[in-house]
Length: 346
Length: 278
Ligand code: SF4
Ligand code: SF4
Image (cartoon, rainbow over the protein chains, first blue to last red):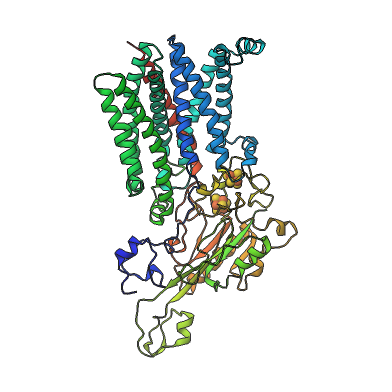
């Protein structure tokens, strides 16, 4: 194996072109078994990150609508758009998740049992609850809008029986749970880049979800020329602040992930993460929002923030795939103090 | 009574009888005929269709042959000094290791499973109920040892059952039955633990001081996992066998993550509320 220098061994991730075990290279220090990944990566393809994004939009929308209601801010257009948004995201999310199953016809087994330690289980239950609450609220809205075949017994019954304002308040915590649990879902695995960031993954996903939701609301209201002046102003201010928080949380996550964050900057993922998330999804919309307010600028910022949020979800999933496939990452992670331990305080 | 495996890699001869017996008994689909080009191991790793996997590790020696070489001693890898100052080595040796599901005491896969398909059965083994699993695949990245995967064309996740069906009939698992050198031993976990310690002591006495037990709460079954019901006697660093030294229970931090997220949610709610102030 004369040609197999230590560099070539490192680059090929242990797969040397000889019949010898890479260990025969005396300069090689990191031990592994032919570079074969010691853990298995998640199979998640596009459905799951797309769901993460939609769930975040639903969660953030519910947050904004509830806060507006609690503060006595009346804007019918906002109420309508947010209720239908939640309905739409909660219709699409289960479709995507069931699509992703190996045995889709058995999806209902998710509701066979509740396990507080399994984010996948709590995710299913919170989606189920949030979806039903959102559905009821949207039904009332539809009845008020005359979408239930006009003014008939059914729509009058719906309006009478569904306490939409109460349900809105109840739905907020469940919605928020859906929003941040997507982050906890990925961090409760053995994948180094995800597990390492267990504390900030949920908050970061939620902040990104709220930011995309605010952008979505402002985009739709601008597009339809709906909504009151004040709503748009509030959205603008909130968008700016939340994008800042999101950026700070992503920065803190990178520090926390330390050496295991490398996959985010790899050839394949960097365009999504650096280009799509950091530049197009955070820096650019913030710059647009910080300047003088204008409709077109605000709309452009919204589109960018929405796309950035989607890119972020895809980047995190793609980076997790690379992280799981890298024996060096896992072995350094699972060799001592780096991995979370039960006795850790934080 | 908890049952488990003790895999003593020092006597494994790499015959793969366990792999074959497991495939046959459990009627696991084939993995195809791929050649990895890595040693004689063409299976590579455990998966939904490989519940026993024999790793082939080449341990070349660094020294050159000199003097009067005792070929028999060489093959037996004798470590004592030889008469006439004859040098050993240069041929190196093989290390084999038959890997299997670790049947963790606190099993990450089981905690991850949202359907409750993964249970602990009456033998305290970690068992996937195939009639419940809906193939969500969440157990796959949860396992710290890369044991489970979803089987293509089936969709569900599979792994070693510790031959639940055979145990119910009072038989030992197929791999342990087939193993010609007793490298795979099956029995009561406490019993196996004692046997493992004894064997390691014996090996140390013979001069193989590198031997140790992997799968204890100190090494291999760490970080909240609380040890493994499948233990291994290893002669090299865990990573050489593609095993982590200090894995962790990923669900340990779910509570902390939820608390941190709840704080973040409150802050975000406050920020949005503040934005309403003119
Ligand atoms: S080794 Fe993996 S598959 Fe086996 S019990 Fe532990 S977590 Fe589950
Ligand atoms: S794939 Fe099956 S066994 Fe694995 S977590 Fe999902 S339901 Fe449970």
